[in-house]
Amino acid sequence: MTDRLAGKVAIITGAGSGMGAAMAKRFTEEGAKVIAVDLNMDRLHGVVDELNQSETVATAVQADVSNLSDVQNFFQVADTTYGGVDIVVNNAGIMDNMAPAGDVTDDMFHRVMAINTDSVLYATREAVKRFLPKHQGVILNTASVGGTNGARAGVAYTASKHAVVGITKNTAYMYEKEGIRTNAIAPGSINTNIADSMKNIDKYGYERQAAGMGTAPEIGSAQQIAEVALFLVSDEASYVNGAIMPVDGGWTAY
Ligand code: NAD
Image 1: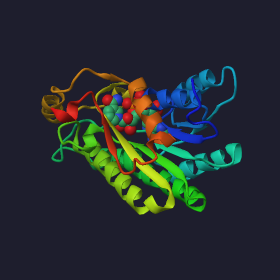
Image 2: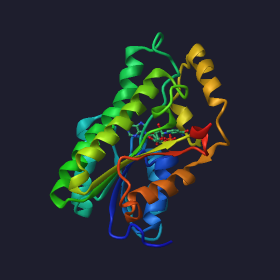
Image 3: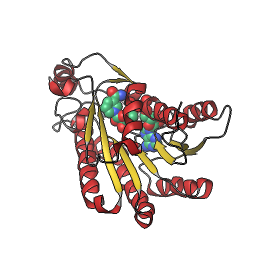
């Protein structure tokens, strides 16, 4: 344990499970205070109770990240609890059902876009409002190899994560001179609970993406993602902006 994030306040969405939970643990080990956000309060309370065992370092906030007023609320909680925020990690997300464009329902497409993409825009806007006056702040988005490749999921998830890459690059460019850094991680295949969000899997789409997934290297861990996230939000990455960092065991090189 060191103090790479001493004095920093981080909002992390999807902190009740998988990568978000691992980031919350790793960031608090490095001295950050965390606003831990999730829709699933059972899981989130478990994570936050463990973080707060010896000292209160995290605050749990329930939110649906696709709901604008929920997003505004967790920023307000950061303001009132910790006097503001320095780091925003837009990590909450869901999978689709692997359906290609010919089969995807409007409901599926819009739901995945709302949770994976609209959420990132809403939180980026709230973050920028707070970061501009102090000319400082860090945004980290969890994109995906599905945000850089076409053979990793269905059309909804693939579109949603490509859009996250776009929001990341544009925000990085637009606010570069304002001291705001925006980057994304593009995880490969990681052992988390994400499969719980997959229902009514499209047979054709599943088989097509399986051919793409079949090339994947050994599955990674949430901890391996959290270590890279820690680097990207820390001052050690002060010259990293607009990067889409693959953390996929080398899959992108295949
Ligand atoms: P996970 O399911 O373990 O964790 C995701 C968390 O997000 C859950 O706790 C869930 O309750 C929460 N969540 C879902 N919808 C929400 C909503 N509307 N509002 C608030 N919280 C919500 O999965 P994970 O793999 O840790 O996923 C984290 C991110 O990583 C996601 O954006 C996902 O798309 C991305 N990702 C995952 C993989 C992988 O292989 N696991 C690969 C690439 C990218």
